[in-house]
Image (cartoon, rainbow over all chains, first blue to last red; front, side):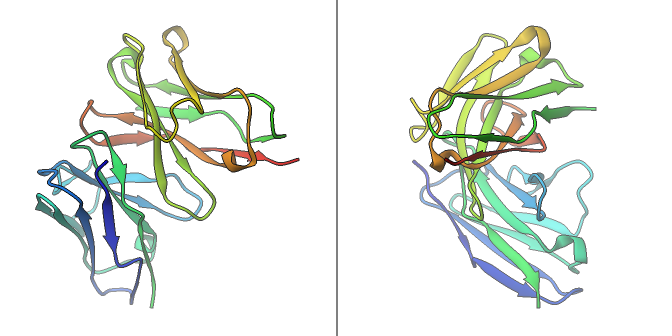
Length: 106
Length: 119
């Protein structure tokens, strides 16, 4: 099973600043990676797929990069609605999620 | 508009059976894989099982093989997740999700079904 490791577990950021979240795969997954946002009490929603393609309706403040085993989600100019938990997920071999990174208000 | 609408919250006792549902609309139901994802209280997301309604091809994550059963009714565009004998450790939120393709993103999510199992 491919293990996805996210870091940090919690990221404290001030509104208006940017946040950089990392996701590492235990083996190469090419660019078969998605990012999801889960706000409190809500279902997750798709942000990024193919490592860097924004899903429909997703703000350009969200950007993804990486390939192979190292991936990054960057959120620029954080707004109140961006404080949430973010999960990466690989779909190269079956599918597994990272454990999540919580972005909270500093 | 694609929608996945799940059945309501359930409160059950250990040993009871349960079937929760996810009704899809807004797209051609047989043509997309649908899966179930578990989220235990305060925890992350775990893959459980997926089904392709067009031919009932089913796959389970190893951790959930034998623990749950996934099925689909193409006539009412609904996918089910069933337990024959619930345990307290089955208490969780369950989300149904649509896969854009077999090896691809989860592009639509249901609102979640909360299952509580307690004596």
